[in-house]
Length: 196
Image (cartoon, rainbow, N blue to C red; front, top):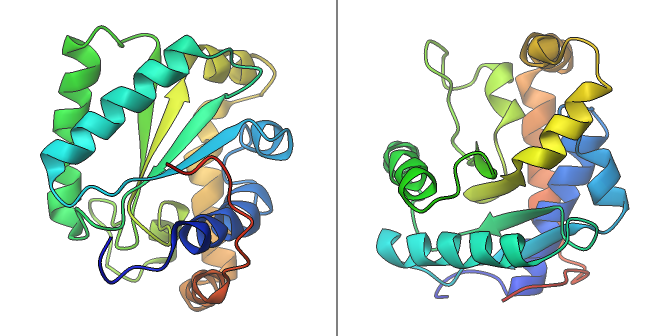
């Protein structure tokens, strides 16, 4: 991949963000267990065209399908070389949804969207709540629906998670969230694994 750090650095930065934002701030109450259990697969795509990234998505869905959840619960597909414009990325999510529907993955997998320039509809670009989905690099997070269903059973009011996250990040503030992202972007200890 041209003009990007090595795979280990990209994964280290992503892991830093997951740990410091997603897990420590409890933005996704279901993330801690697979993260701490080493059941998250990190893959850095070499794709520079959306069609190549779509092939990577399908390959990773097939790998998840063929692998026990106890070994790999979820895949974080990082793609620094393509869809760096958020609007292009957002449009691509519809193509991924079509792949899940037409490829026979519906009811089995879903995709969470994460991007450095993520912006919810109706928000200003620098509103703190956008940082719930702002990651160091564009990411497609492939999730097993069965795992989510199991996690939700033990969680009171999962429908309130987005509201709670907005309140949490508004308290912290956009400036501090930017600092955390910047700090993660300076990390690069090369601890990544399972890259391809």
